[in-house]
Image (cartoon, rainbow, N blue to C red):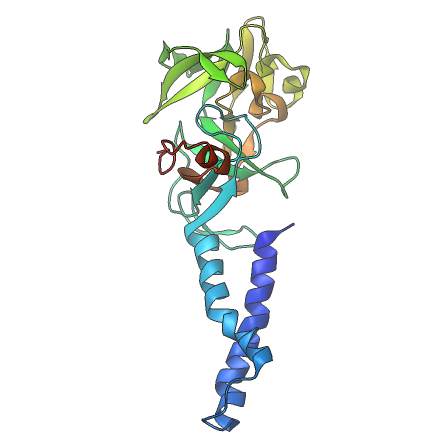
Length: 263
């Protein structure tokens, strides 16, 4: 379901009725007469729908996290906000950029339209920007011949699963990642060879082309990302995720520590 298109359609329909009522029908009505009920439930909602449309299209948009590919940073069921103007102001529906306000930085958590099905939104971390040479070897990332600083943390426990946990610092961002000792890693999938990356004896080597970005999930061995399906074009960017505002499961369990946090 294209929610943006639905809101846009409602905005147009209610807007036409609002303007027609304001400038055509209202001047002809008895000043003491109430607005017809059908207009109350159509044109009457236009201001609210218009504000929602503008906020959602240009300022911030809510998203729900459907999978565990970004654990431990983001959990299944997290409701987050995405800054829509971090990577440029774009026209809704057609996604054409009309003004440049910034570009993704290494370490950002970005929402983008999945390159293989642009009706689906994905969320991953920016690992490589245009021109970067990214290597993923022995489950560690090396960007332009410089390893990302990594520090071991206590193991991560989640629903009976135990994973190795690390702290990484990439660009200006410090965050946690997970690896599984018994998994060989998504970077060694055969599909990677024809997606802009090359499988080597040590792992994976990718040269990020201009106008594209290399994305990875923080849950490294449980994330389908650029190692599998290739780079993300700049035109597919939606915005930068920055705020966790709700998780029903955690709230019902009395856990509130992650709410209001993220970046």
